Length: 224
Image 1 (cartoon, one colour):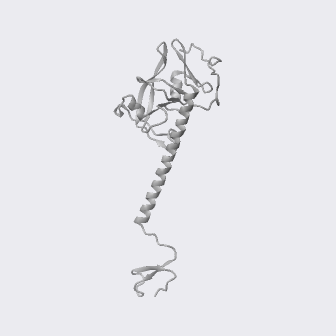
Image 2: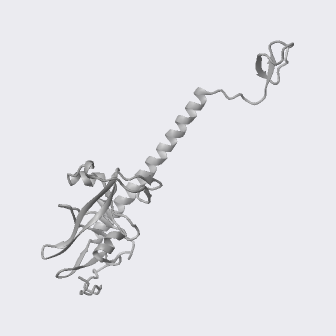
Image 3: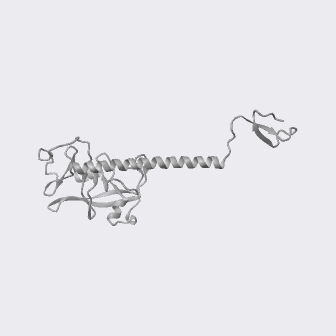
């Protein structure tokens, strides 16, 4: 499949390229038996991420997952993510006349994201795919020539906006959770413990037995 030369030229260039490199590369592969329109190609990630909601749309139960090796960061803002498990799924790019299908390993996470899935460097390597973040296109060597996939700038913009809104919602939720935890801890501290105020002194009940029981009174009061 490497006999085809992959290049980008004027035929790939749209009439207008707004803010080159700013928008995400969003593709629409077939994963399993389902075509998804919001799959992010993330060349900066060494993982393929699948959201549990996407898995449900495919009719795949959690009982089909195998244990994941370790947690990771970077998918949810400020969170350490422990995957629910791993699953191998076929991913297909192209058309009936010219397509490539490879099996990728996905880490399944238990929350919903702005995309259906995130595909990282393992996919780039498996498909020998070359991206153009200027033209928002991905080219893959296929059995009958080079396969070109990509998205419109309008769709990429909509996905980017949705992703930002989702991240802001996540950040707000995390802030509210932190505030609630701090308020709860403060309530427990005040309800379950007594912290003496400043400016107090102990006065023994029996002056002849100073080590016995004592009262705590204001330091401004006479001990008598």
